[in-house]
Length: 87
Image (cartoon, rainbow, N blue to C red; front, side, top):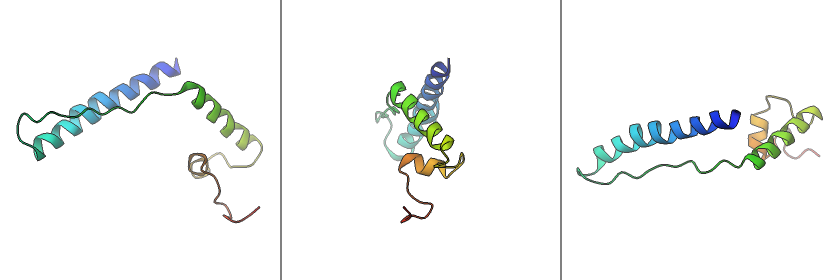
């Protein structure tokens, strides 16, 4: 069910926000009439990668390696910080 909602949000962002609202206006403002408008696509979601990353974050929080709100889980798992050179 969550996957359904995520796909809907993604489609809404692509079609309504980026394509209809932003790109159409940018092209109309910056280029002559009749200029084709490019389309924006976020790409496909990788559910396996998303589940694996979610489990990794859960395990790191459970093991007290990172705090639950830690700047966003150390910038989405690029990690270090805290005491950058700490071991």
